[in-house]
Length: 330
Image (cartoon, rainbow, N blue to C red; front, side):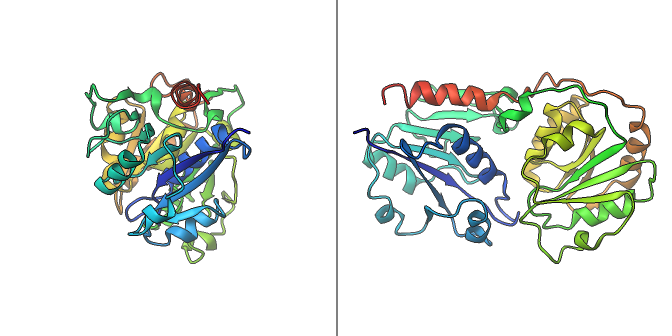
């Protein structure tokens, strides 16, 4: 009888103060693409208890949740050397976890967007976003880095030709903690020649003023798990500098970006230099004239072009790497 492999996703999530929701989203994408077979794999989510962490995770992952506190070793005592660890956290791997993995002799370890401090030998490093901040040189690890390793759902590798509508997609990540939705909407709602599709994530607070918006050219999209069809049809996107920015770029959309958090700066600056995004603000400050000028020009756009930096195929590349490095002898 084949032994079930345990897959530990070490992630973090909160309302946007430290981690946001992108790390969970990527880990769920990997789980659903590679480790969904319950007869072969059992997946656990190990996380720090940050602001509303358990509440946010439980909306998507109902069980096998483990809080990363002082007794995490006891809760993971079932781990064997053939099990798999996948790290996707803004904090990186720490000394406690490094020692635990080394004591268990686990060598099937994947670090996503991580500079690997402290140094963990024989780990596979998969850096797409982090590469935009720092290029790694480390002979002790197998490193895959560059913009073609920015992880998105595999559907973003598809570039369908559709008739574009006079619509703009607005998204502020999973939480909109800083209430940027309402600032943008109040500015653009007067542009009656355009319609705006506002993605309201499940983690957006019910008291967020965006939920009270009633305007003929504003449509709120709630509980939408598949955003791909909306990306395809719009002429442009107004987004924060997280995962949604990369999704928009992968489909060649005119992309307006608000730097919501400091860790987004390097990524936004990289693509702004390539003239692929227009930076429309930092933190709570919105560059109103810059956004309005860009939107006034956007109605002449009729097609979307492919992005040579992000092709949306990173998940397919990662799947091949995991199958080759972790699962070939299983």
